[in-house]
Length: 287
Image (tube, rainbow, N blue to C red; front, top):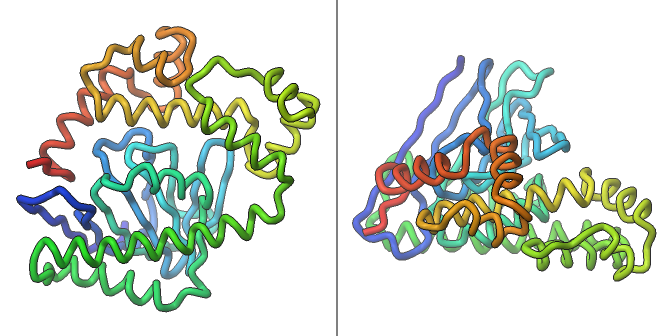
């Protein structure tokens, strides 16, 4: 239950990053979204105005309070809903074309939750952008792209500042370890390899990584590989399951298919088919 106002924007031109949809909602019950099961190929920004929401990423859980926002890529690994102890949740959301989707995904990894209490100008511009979309008062496609690009770079600056502030508290070797995982996810890497490279025991690697990132290195690597696989399946539906598995660091197509289904509830082929069809008809027009 609740109320909502939403919009979608369609243009003949799609060569630049632009706003494609959004709206505002107040939800009171039965609100639940699993990004692993959503079709499409776009970037999502959702900002809390009143009440509280709940965000789950893997085994990590977060409470979204007024002034907080989260980012997601569709498809993705976030699950979000009304917080169990909240009566309602009011928020705005903005959906953007996937032109900066790699950078957007990196922001979701670096800063799962962003607080904008110290960024009132950004919030004002965010609300204004949503209102322009609702009223469909962009003068043309290029005003949309200009405002959207400004939104993106302001968001990127805030995300990087937040991430850097958090990283200042992290052990330097841990930062390098995560970067190593990000770079070598497509290779046959193990905890033993990391222990040798970073001169740490396997126990220390797991314990410290989980303390700072709320998941084990193995869980992080699997989530990263699945995310990369999702992107490949959308952008290159002609690839075989075996090829996608190999490109994303899985040792066999069977194991990849099993893990992919567990994480998304789809088989790789079904996921590629549904998202390819969706891209051409709903959120993203590639003319």
